[in-house]
Amino acid sequence: MKRRGALLRLLAAGQPVTAAALAAALGATAAELECELGALADWGLAALRTADGYRLELPLDLLDAAALEAALGAATRARLERLEVHDELDSTNARLLADSDLGAGRVRVALAEYQRAGRGRRGRDWLQPFGSGLCLSLAWLFETPPAALGALSLAAGVAALRALSRCGVTGLSLKWPNDIQKDGGKLGGMLAELRLEAAGPAYIVIGVGLNVRLPTNARFAIASAGGVPPADLAGGPLPSRTALAAALVEELVGALAVFEAEGFAPFMAEWSRADALRDRTVRVHGADRVRDGVARGIAPDGTLCVEIAGQLEHLTAGEVTLRAVA
Image (tube, rainbow, N blue to C red; front, side, top):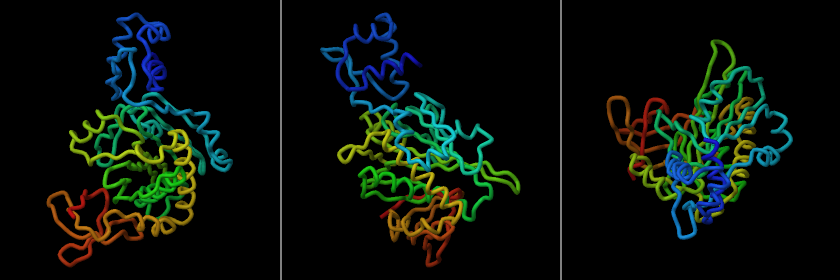
């Protein structure tokens, strides 16, 4: 794995590098180099052979842990207990959920260039090649679980839009309960996971996955898996991944502090303005039936209000999935 990561750093600029130069830098034989080049497929990438050597389809903007931490404001750094960046993990959420003993008001952050078992809502796979987006998780402890805890992923969506706006990316929307959309495609999503003790504190991990610059093979793989068509930031403002990660950490930490004190209310108006489904016909898939209705916005507890057969129903994220019909 270390050699594979080193190989990608040699190819990150997107310019061709000769096989001889790659082998010498890695201390590898020609056969070992070919093996490593082929193994890039395990991380969703491919090295293209050219007349001048090998190159990647797209340059890689790799994460820099030191620069990320330095970009955080003093208040956020004061809360930061640990920030780690990995080439590969099963899942950044799983990494932090395995932790314990986090103090109230303290923060742990994990990022990975590639996740072997990235997960979205309802256990779906989150497909993202090495270095093509952000896989970021943040852990926080609520000493006393706030009201409307089920709306936390919606507050995280607002925080993500604020972070993207800070980096020059605007015109985005939020699809209930946890998707970030750009021009109708899925730019990213949130996954909030909770470890709750009886009559005690709530340990929460919020995972954010964002597509920054997807190679062609990733778009095809996501479409083939039946997922929502992906979107990325190519073609518009393209912030560095490190700067975007720093903005996300800043906004998530700020949002969690506000949510702990005031619940979802301070985020509701912002979320409603970004609502991608409001007044649109949606198809609701429940445990045993499929129904059509019209989305009428969100309630203060984060449930989705849908008008079905003249009656307003409140839908809970864990119970249904839905897509816009029109």
